[in-house]
Every structure is written in C-alpha cells, then in structure tokens.
Length: 288
Ligand code: NAD
Image (spheres, helix red, strand yellow):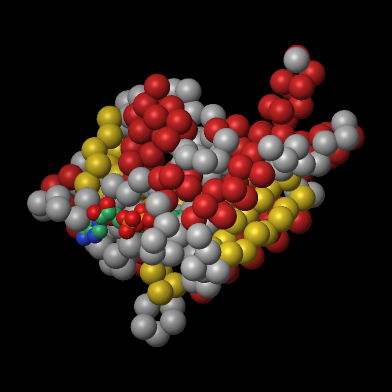
C-alpha cells in the first residue's frame, strides 16, 4: 500500500477561494473584514509567520494591520492597545503572535482580546467552549486538520484517534475537536510510556510533538490516516515533520507531507475565522 498524499496546499487554495467570495459579498455590503496582528519582540520565526499571515490576508481582500512592540514594552501598553482594537469597528479579528517574550503574562494578554475577535481561538472562553461545543472560533491548526480530513471524506465518528502531543495550541484542542465528532481519542505526550502501543491502535494518527522521526512505520497500523503537524528544521536545512514520511507512506492509507500538509491550512483557517467574525458582526448589527 502506498498512502494517498493529502495536499494541504490544494485544499488551502480551494478554501481560500471560497472565502474570497465571502469577502466579496461582505465588500458589496460595505464591510471589509479587518485583522490586527500584534508582534512583540524580534523572534525571527514569528516575523516570518506574521508576514505570511499578512500576505494571505491581502490575497483574499482582508484588511490587515501589524502592530509591533519592542520586547521591553510594558505589558500595560500591550493591554491598552488590545482594548483599543476591541473597540475599533474596522477590526474583526485580533491576533497576538506567540510566544511572547519573557516577562509577559500570556493568559492575561490573551484574555484581554474580546471573545468576538479572538480569531486564534486562544481566549479561555473559546478554550472552554471546546468542551461544551460553544466555541466561537476553533484554534487554527486543529481546525485545519479537521478540514483536511473532511476534504478527503475521511470518517471521524467511531474511529480510534491517537493524538501525539498535548500542547494547548495543537494537541489538546485537536483531541477535544475530534471527541466532539464522536471519535474515541487518546492523547499521548512526552511522558507516555511505550508510545507505539498506543499509536499502533490508531485509525487516525495526528502527530504534533516537534520531534523528527518520532513515528516509524512499525508504530503505525496498516491503512491508518497519518496527519503530521510537526515542523522541524534539520541541521542540513531541510524541513521535516515528526513522521518518517518515506517509511510510513508505504503503510498508511493517507498521509500529509511536510511542508505542504497542515502548514498551509493553519493560516487559511485564520482567514476563515476572520471572515466569519466580520459576517457575525454584520448579522448582529442588522438584528440589533
Ligand atoms: P509544544 O512543544 O508546545 O508541545 C509538544 C508536545 O509534544 C508536548 O505535549 C510534549 O509532551 C509532546 N512530546 C514531545 N516529545 C514527545 C515524544 N518523544 N513522545 C511523545 N510526545 C512528545 O509544541 P506545539 O506548539 O504543540 O507544536 C508541536 C509541533 O507542531 C512543532 O513541531 C511545531 O512547530 C508544529 N506546529 C505546526 C503548526 C502548523 O501549522 N503546521 C502549527 C503549530 C505547531
């Protein structure tokens, strides 16, 4: 068996096309969706991520604004800026690029963002909503994985899912989202003993650990769907995921490549959340 490649770039292109039409609809009603991105400090990777997000906004007609702060900016100034953006009608989504430099209280900063503009889905309200099913904005990376599964018509209900990685931004929300779709979900992490005894049971294996070659073919059930969220830069400069791609693709039924799998979907889902925020505001303005 050779796995079918899930082409994240192609799915992202299709979803962005659909959302561009929704932006055009909004524009025809006098609303231009707006995203504010806050970047604190000079982390090189964060600069690249922010640039990609801004470019993606431009491509589908979302107005964007980048606000940069030095890493020694007082937290109160950051909070004041977020509060001003909360009140700004031209802004529908607010994103604080993580990680924040040392000294900032991430929770305090994220919880200042209005729930209605929390397009990254990291506000406590949205996180809690993953349990009750009342999330306003699903976090972008797991939301993107869910879209990839849907794009291939891969059933989730009743499937055994193993999520490797238990971070607040990927692993845990992923597990909750797939539980909500009635999968049987197991979460593994760095302290899991004998990872393979869990991964081998997975019909759908989602890996987000940040460890190259963590998942080897003998750890994967024949015919499993393998979603590789990991992004690792090797010493020779190559970008790889967490899965031994060449080995596992001979055993899986579907697999995502790195790059070109989950990555393009993360930014895409940010665009989707921002457009939805603008649509909801328009609806509630009309209702009110
Ligand atoms: P994190 O460091 O916050 O969390 C990693 C998780 O993996 C932890 O729960 C840890 O316990 C677990 N883990 C580490 N080593 C393990 C091991 N040997 N066995 C089992 N579990 C192990 O990382 P994160 O922010 O969740 O990101 C994970 C990976 O996904 C990184 O490579 C990151 O670059 C990538 N990522 C990709 C996207 C994307 O858009 N494709 C988005 C976010 C993160």
